[in-house]
Length: 243
Image (cartoon, rainbow, N blue to C red; front, top):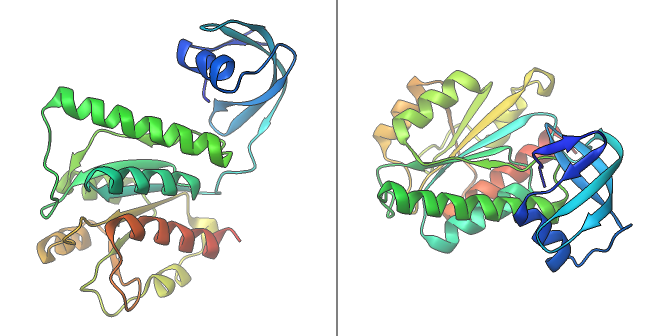
């Protein structure tokens, strides 16, 4: 959990995190836990005061998390239906993603909601990311942003990432393995990954991606489902650069 109030060696948790500690984990005063302070910093804490809606922790030690990749990974995931999107978020957080940007590309079956309904959906996606981060021992809580249009997404990726990977079923030349072999991991601070919707990316979208510096790559001889492709690419990235 990332917390907002840290003063004089103590943390005061918000209502939701206090409820999680006291009612879900059922912790008692004197027990220890790890708290994510943000920026990859963790704190070893002891429960100092505890009630249903309020928990105060005493900070015993702080240190840099060792569970985070050496580079940031931003996943630009085309919005998919219900459980598919939720599964993608959960598994990609477990595999080390830093930020997830939902994208509305041309062939998305799901279309933009009115703002209030979309905010509720995004809040749910963020909660899924939080739970996956807790379960997998992440040193950060990956951010799930509000959805953006495809053109906006490729422009942002091209401006911020050192390498932009664009897995596309119509690419038959450059493999992901070959693209990664061309990169020195010490020169990378951020990798962007684009994943298409159930119907894949259109040829025009691939051209727009190229114009913004993206590298279309193939993931192999089989076409992966949208909820499989993201975790597969992240696993390949971590195998290449971390293990």
